[in-house]
Length: 461
Image (cartoon, rainbow, N blue to C red; front, side):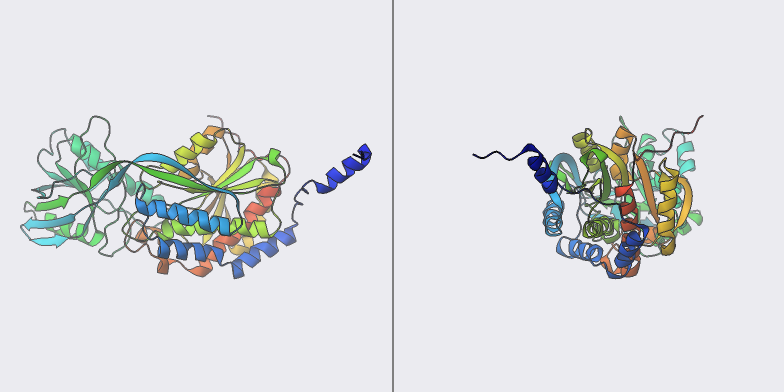
């Protein structure tokens, strides 16, 4: 065998080595942003395909398994690398029969949906007097034992907000209200749905019971029915309800995350993880929550791919079982806690336009550049510290990552959230493309930014 000179071997190796991705200029980033704004189809195709070909995707069920297979096939088709399903086991709850009826003094039916983790009334249901709590604070203040034998009814006064803060205000009624009522003797709980619509649709969602409190039946009334119940109660007569909820536990079943990579040219630069969640509640088809989010992050990564990639790897996390306990995010952090992540982002607040960007990023010049690239899309620079989302929360906490939030307009989100109205027709294609454009510009800048991506230093107490 003839031996080539070492210098020639070195030259040949250099020619064959992968070329580092070049940092795109502001003009190139603007061009990619504007191309996404006017021409992207990937985000819509994902939202349309997932809701049409799979539909509702309750965590741990056969439908969620079909969604994982669908997602892997689509991500492979789009040209991403290392596409795989990472399964894990979880305890799975499914709904059954759901009816609510006022039996006295004003007999009429009401629309109700069981809350996740609710126990069953049994097929015959239960009948009991209503104990009314206008606010969560009223329930907390109720004496121990004061609800013995009663059905607790919990209300709230949630209003639409652009930043979604109304959910934080009203959410405890659903998140922990049934458990508190049970601890004070209630045999069941119904709540005014945590939402802002006026449709006769109950809002699904999970509730929790602390250790030592036996789970009880728990359901959400549609907002018009809840308001009707409040008018009945205001007449000063005892109100009795017959409630039938027959959910059940399936035991341990399989869920899983779907993961794909857009490899960077410099493995030492670390990776940016971008997330959505694949599962949904089962009343609608999960279009805004969160098929649109999966469409947005994937379309943006595809735009970055088309522009030549970046120095940093971009990892897509389509998380499973977010709605019922963020099991996918926890499983991801456990499986990938040793991987070098540098920044996390998530899209899980519908499909309306991005209106502001918030940062948890130390590099001031980089924040300025991102804000300037987003300004032509009508996106302002916010002042809140970015927190990420549920599915990236565990990995952010484990590795103290930098975070960017592209905040979507939430004024209509809780009209649709967890309801039968969460369907494809609620997505505005132009607003969806604006999201993709914002994500595209942000990822292109972050992916090739020099130096390290680090979070802001914690403020001194």
